[in-house]
Length: 437
Image 1 (cartoon, one colour):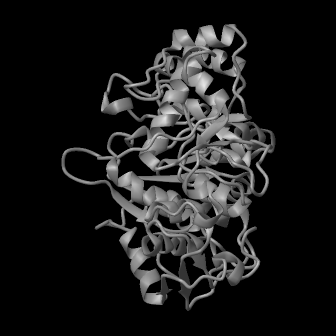
Image 2 (cartoon, one colour; image 1 turned 180 degrees about the horizontal axis):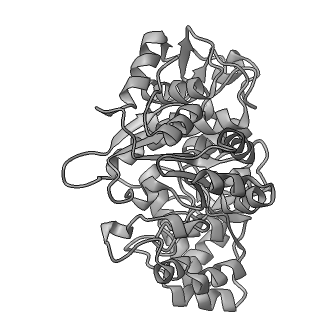
């Protein structure tokens, strides 16, 4: 039976509607989330928030209209913590930049194409965003908004984030604390249900993951991350056998570990903030289990992410999570003076698009026939361009998610998965030559 959480006097006043309808509905939603999660109270957030799904309307039971939000903003209502939005809360996941080249149909409807100026204008929701920005929303339109937000939480701070690769980035990479609960309610009230990763004991390592191969390349970090996720499920792994990760490798590992499993937190002994040693990572407690991810498992994981019967490639897509500025620099070197034989889409954060343009990368990409875009994702858009039956990608997360996009009624989209170099080669040749090395 669900138990009512213990509320402070201030929280009770909000629940009773003394601070308005919007805050009241937000508190009602959080109280229900406490009941569902088993949290006995709310925790005050002192870090940052991500106003993610389900957007403005918290649920069918706690519907908040845009008119209510506008009235709240006009009366001086503001988000209570620094709040970012990694995706649109209004439905359409449309590119911010480069949309002119995006031939994907929204909701598989041929009349709603992302390269249609009218559809793009509608998808930008400028009037609605103006209201949310008035309340303090910082719109990043990036699954990797931690790359550009320039204001990160510190070790131990309580946050409310949402997107899958953000969870382990916040908890493990930064040492801050969050669950999958970023919403209008948590960011507006600076409160979240107190359970799971907000509680110190739940952050301790419970399973030991080892490998017989030193994990040091981007591809190895990606494949190992997916395998660690599969082996860990919802446990907190202590991960051995790696070099010190770069920013790109953190992105790949964090997105892969949260895709292969439901890993919100992990420890790299001697690297991540809460794991100077294995003993610190576990609190001195024994592991529930130990798992060896050997060469054969890594190879099988790589093979499972490749599902194609032909080496012919129709399209190349890189940028899941969104590429950082050094990745864009590397791509500019690889494509400079070259010409793509098939469409190549490169996705980054909107705030980095202008930097790439100013640094000359955009010009190099365009001359090569590659299209730089920002602020969206093929998997989030839920489709691929018409005629694309085989696609090459460079992350385990996109390889896993993109299978939900169908090229036609004949079957699944074929996916070639490998390194960024493999993808560039495919773009230039139209053939897939990637392999596990």
